Image 1 (tube, rainbow, N blue to C red):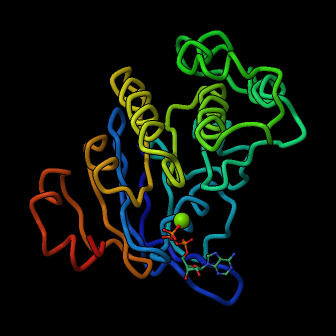
Image 2: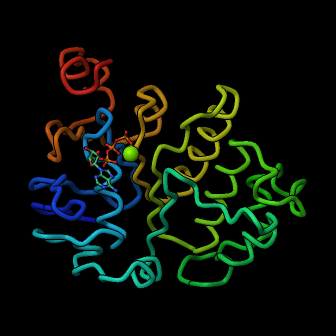
Length: 232
Ligand SMILES: Nc1ncnc2c1ncn2[C@@H]1O[C@H](COP(=O)(O)OP(=O)(O)OP(=O)(O)O)[C@@H](O)[C@H]1O
Ligand SMILES: [Mg+2]
């Protein structure tokens, strides 16, 4: 579904990705693991067209991906960044309305009603401002906004970062439901247990390259790989 081949990317003079190659398959969840600074977020920003690619190729459904972030989103990829990017001065409802009905393409389309069904907590917070939300509620809102864009591929950067265990469990269960419904996902995570329990496929990134590829079962059994690449 999404193929990255020999990607080189970075920030200004600083190169971060050095020939990164990975593939995300339709109907599956790919976890991208790796230590702090490995290049996970840089990989996602490069996919979304937020950072210029210096070399390499990205194919979505076998065709070169669009170059502008808006066009990439329109083609069916929703991105929930590490920073969540809730509009603080807008209410929950307004944050959702901005995303709603922008792009069609899934069947059935995600409606406001349907996302509030998934996240009933947001239904209780509709008139609250973005800044009045807890970290968990902000993450729910960020995911809900992503869904309203009717993606075929949902990309999440550290969805559990800074959240209490009970909220991590809730987010896990919601993503598990979305997976069961057939949504393709790429999840970047520091939380090894969370990532390996949701994923079908795992890649590990170190110093801007993929250094390990396999199944969640294989990485769970490979304590040496965990120690070398993840510091687990
Ligand atoms: N805006 C930036 N300008 C310059 N360098 C950056 C910028 N953002 C990240 N970097 C550098 O790029 C490298 C990779 O960062 P990246 O954010 O991709 O790591 P990561 O794997 O997502 O780590 P983390 O788990 O901490 O989120 C790091 O060395 C980081 O310092
Ligand atoms: Mg990151």
